[in-house]
Amino acid sequence: MGTGFNDELRLRILLSTIQVFNTHGMRFTMDDIASYMKISKKTIYTVYKSKDDMMLDMVDYLFDSIAVSKKKILDNPDMPLKEKIKAYLIGMPDSFQSIKFTELFLLRDKYPHIYAKVRDRLDSDWEPAFELLRKGQKDGIIKKDANLPLFKVMMENSISAFFESDILKKLGLSYREGLETVADILLDGIKA
Image (cartoon, rainbow, N blue to C red; front, side):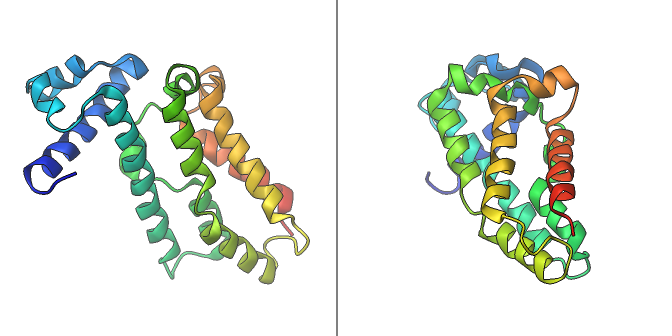
């Protein structure tokens, strides 16, 4: 992307898309976003060629924002390690609490290339989590013999299930509640 106006417009579009997504789910259109923003669809197309391009950028925006939130958790010297591990595993900005992630299961079948990007982002950058878990092992919070690579696979697959089925919707859980539940189950299974 360029700089200046287009970056500012890009951010406004992405933030508006979150709001439109919350009311329309995955069925939102570029017309819905233009109407919400009170701008022309043509203006949106100066930043994004298509809804797919916008959604791919949205995935990066969401995961980049989550990375910033997780860095704040890592950098918090006052947070006890046990809390830090769980907070890091479920970390997401407070501003994302209202996002209707329960609709994301539609990605797999309707937008497989976007789903692939979500999977790729979920699978990457686990080293800080491993560092926390290894520190937890050293400090006696996590079992010394806990298989951390297997823990990672279980965590990733649990999160992937949220994107592959309507399990959250069926259980009446928000994405965050689902993440917290998974983290609690997995961490209780490896606690010392």
